Image (cartoon, rainbow, N blue to C red; front, side, top):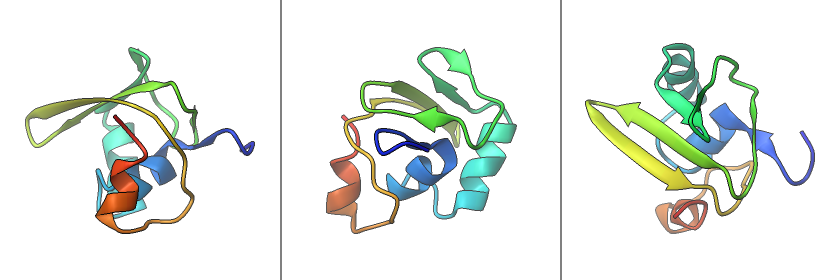
Length: 84
């Protein structure tokens, strides 16, 4: 990945949509995640600021715009700064 992009599974984990990268990967493999309206089949797909990510989880649909990247999982306050 380049400094201006991050693996999708890592971003979903860092943004606290999933408790583990494994759970994020299962959601991606199950077709529950889209980037800019396109289905994603690879866990390592690059996500960049400005991308729109759609996540279907527990019967709910979350649509967020990527605002930042963080390779590490921090507190919820940091995670909320990664999307809008």
